[in-house]
Length: 463
Image (cartoon, rainbow, N blue to C red; front, side, top):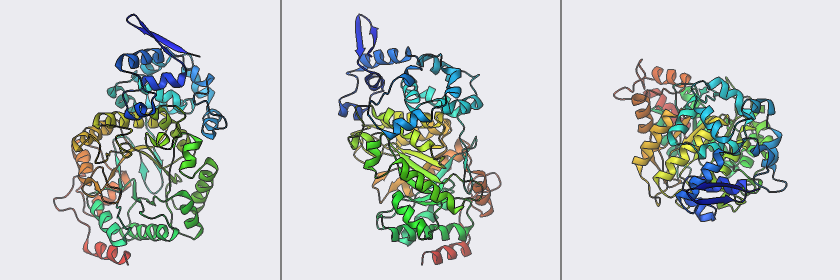
């Protein structure tokens, strides 16, 4: 089936819904690289007009990816809730956009709608929205999760404390973690990207983080972001695993490139639940995504990278994760060329994840060969804060010395909390006050520091 619209005296035709979605996408270097982008702004506008007139029901009547035996497509259709979809089933995509923006469409209504949406629907509606629209709707989407604290409450923004080290040195990891803690980051998770991926190093890192959390009685969770198979082996060895991490994508072939499938993720989810380490909740999974992942693995099947990103959210939602984040500018300019594209992609990913029912965070970041800088990251951070992002990622000095990319620093989190009035998770906020990091109003003390005995305990934990 083809789709068309007329701009001026020119009629534009799009050969499939997949083609229409690609051509309607805001300018993106990855789609241009794949040869599926609109030829220019006029064709893009024509595609957006055609998309706005399309009935939502079309997304249920069409296998948009068009790949046989793709388990992600099967999951999307098998998990779709028709009764939840019923209130909007009569709408076109343009009418759906207006309905989302209406003040009468509340957080409670959006929460009930989530099971009735498909990833392609949420990706499609984002393509006909301004950035302002993406912020306004995402701000109404409330997704709350729990493990050792509570993430996603209104008026709060959590942070991941990311103490990476080029050689996974225990003292280096500990020093970076302390740097973040004394500035109040780490309520979402204290999470290390390991330089290696051995079971021995995984166990050493999670054990180190566990001793750190116990020594300071921090109401948070920790994670070593090794491969899910390594986490399973570590759990079998009795390691203190809080969250199981995995990078995921939107097609079966792309996930195979990551060395995972749905069956393996279910096994990991059950293993993590069996540990019963969460004090107040059982959201035990942590997923990471990013536009361009499927394209870089030649597993996008001709679909635009933003819709493929949204399909990854169907995988994530299946396992009730504590945290999901897009690493928005990490892959490089081949997929998101400059700061403008990164900012738009970050707002799209957050909007799509939240509307789909995920506890969405964003790694506000870029690589050093991208046409972007920290001013762009400041703008994205402020926009995401207005949109109600669940968490962001912070590294010392905004410079990840292991992954070699630029992110946010703990100082950026302080800025958001004190200027935009976004508090940490409530349990973590109380801990910060008790440790003398903040005063009773929640503001940082002039010399925020942990106590001498606590620092001694941390040093001993590194041995």
